[in-house]
Length: 165
Image (cartoon, rainbow, N blue to C red; front, top):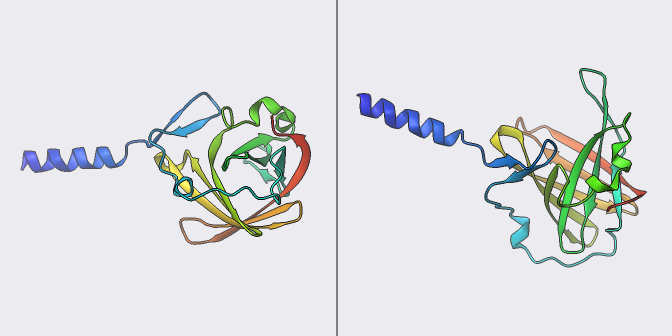
């Protein structure tokens, strides 16, 4: 009976182990990257401007009153990043964080016509891959995502004049 309890304990502990690690106070990365989109061929799409960041149209107000806004950036090789910022500090204007090496979350994107998919690795639940599916509409990216309780969320990002790096 003790050995069965020990086996169950080890299995529970192993299933709760983290899939990622903190590079610094801001950036979270997968220990062993397993992005599904990375396995798909990448074809550059001129509808995505890789020189500038895309800022989220809406803001999120936290319980302590901070106003957060998200920013997306894309590279010419199919990789992308997501950052969130306290708008009072205007750190989204600091291009040193708007890079694949210093961004909070990184991942891959793929496009087909005006459709875009963006997969990122996030620090939720010991590390989680999140896939956003969306449409490119001029300088606007409209994403939808179904979270755990299967509730659909929409995110709208608009191309800014802020450089990516």
